[in-house]
Amino acid sequence: MSHLENSGLKRIVLTGAPSSGKSSVMNELKSIYGKQVALVPESAVVLLSGGFPPPQHTELAEIRAFQNSIVEVQRGLEFILPHQNPEAKFMVFDRGTLDGAGFWPPGPEDYLKQFAIDKSAEYRKFTDVLFLELPTPEMFGGVNNKRFHNYQQSLHSEQQLEKVWSGHPGFKKISATPTLQEKIDLVSSTIKKIMSCQG
Image (cartoon, rainbow, N blue to C red; front, side, top):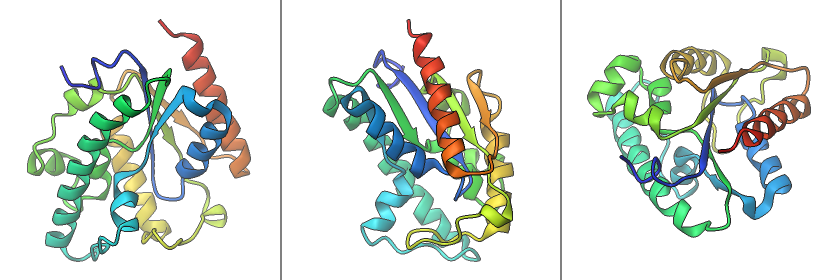
């Protein structure tokens, strides 16, 4: 049993393609719940923010190096964050280790094999999976200083991510909405329902 499985907290992972709204949702949850929630940042963003160079989409060796680093950072965050947030009643993760499958060109099954990821073990880390659907091309957030996916690349990642996460018993798909705020409200409402089933 992993450290996370033994933590006794509700553990919710947010997943979805780049520009699906995860970061905005995380900011809203911190505003609503404060110390009641332990927020686990996206490992890729942690690395990129620290100066790790983004891999070129055509260079598999660079992508492999990046994904290896993401896996190590993710595992470290999973271990440290519960210790540092003793007042938290639940944890929300901006992606999990399985999310690497959405950004590995050879596909999800090859990702699990190449990086020695046990999908069942990863499923057990989380009580619920909230899959945020990508917005329409017109509502797509474009590229920020830490993002390097265009719409078509994000759409492909979405398909791969849904494939790898949809078998989780707590999988819940959050559909695209006309505005980002509506999606934030929908996720917040879903989390309130999850928390009401505590125990």
